[in-house]
Amino acid sequence: LDKMTALEKRYPGLKVERYSDFKSTRFAFSGEIPPNLDKELNRLHKEVNDAFFSDETVRAVVREEDLSGDWFRAGIGETADQATTAARYARRQKPDQMFVQNFGSRVLRRRLEKDRVSAGNIRLKLEERLKETGMMTKSEGSGVLIPDEGVFDLVRKIEDPGELKSALEARYGVRNLEYRDIEDIKNYSALVDQFSPGIHVAKREIVNFDEAIHGGLSIDFAGMGSHNARATAEALAASGSLDEAVDLARVGEQKVTSVFDQKKDSLRNIMKDTFAEGEVRTICTGDDCAVIPIRPLNPRDKKAIMSRIASQADPASVRLSFIPDNVTIPLDRTLLGTHGESIEKALRKQLSGYLEPAKLKGILFAVDMQGTRAGSGKVGLLVETSPSLRLTASERELIESRLKAAIETVNQSLVKQGDAGAYTSTGIL
Image (tube, rainbow, N blue to C red):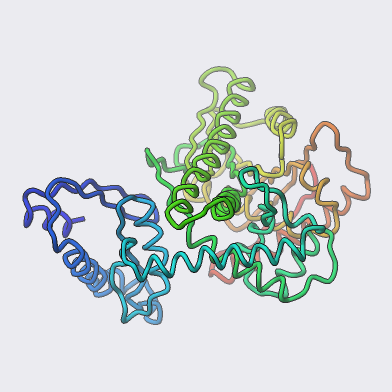
């Protein structure tokens, strides 16, 4: 940012608008654009990279093998989305080729158009081979078959081809997927990601539980990344050119954002209906929300919240983690909520292939964290189902046993990170 200010001073007629979020920094140029702007931006980009990786504070906290100097990639274009697409392509550059990619470059446009066409060709092969599996669903825009959100979800989470194959077979109830299918799915997902638009946040909100002295509720709306990937895939399938693909991808992202905004609005309304005015405060950003009460939440409160959420469409897309009221360290409250969401995620993975996908989609889980310190304490599970769904006794036993396995998975992950990992299960509450 300081170097961009210096650039403005060097060219008084140049106006630079700044935007930054948790993952990126963006600049909009207007006024008198210097003819050598590309050259200036390349110089600035190299200077910033060099300065960052020579900074003593950075070198003190980052492992030596990770100080490769190629963390930051940059692109420019006539629009923000063109610049983002160019920056994503820049990820392919080697460390010694760190220059700013220009969307208007004929070379880059040819490469991106080739990627767009390649994505379409792979999609056609997947449509032909997987159309009867449920893994390919019809696009609202073009009507062609595109990988389901669940496919993108698993590809984003699982890198190993064998594990991905098993996970897809379990989720969609199919057998004997071929490794060429897995390879095509992974390659297709990577090409789609190349055209994924950046997420712009109008107001930066920090979701934490620093002020939640009475505990609270951590909420994660699952699947935003996979829904955006699906929307970008639909844009590529409907596009007839590179420019149209970039434009349609933004339209798709806006639709997905609108859906998640509606979910957050619905959550706020549930809290208003469940509690008296002023009893809770709801803070949301991106796909996360925090509910902070002025008193401890009791079992009746938790039941009321879950019943309302479970009665809505796709309750499985909401991850809930209740934080107790006796946690004195603010950071521990936030970590307990995060660990609870991780346990919920691990539980669903444990149940995949054992419960029917349609049934699992209708179950809402809330992880009830009962310890006073992050990394240890008892963990219970609250279960609510959509109105038309009933769980059998054997299914509840299955969930309870898989909960223990999910908790152990999270414990092991925490220990690998050097943190405490000693959560224990109290079963379904």
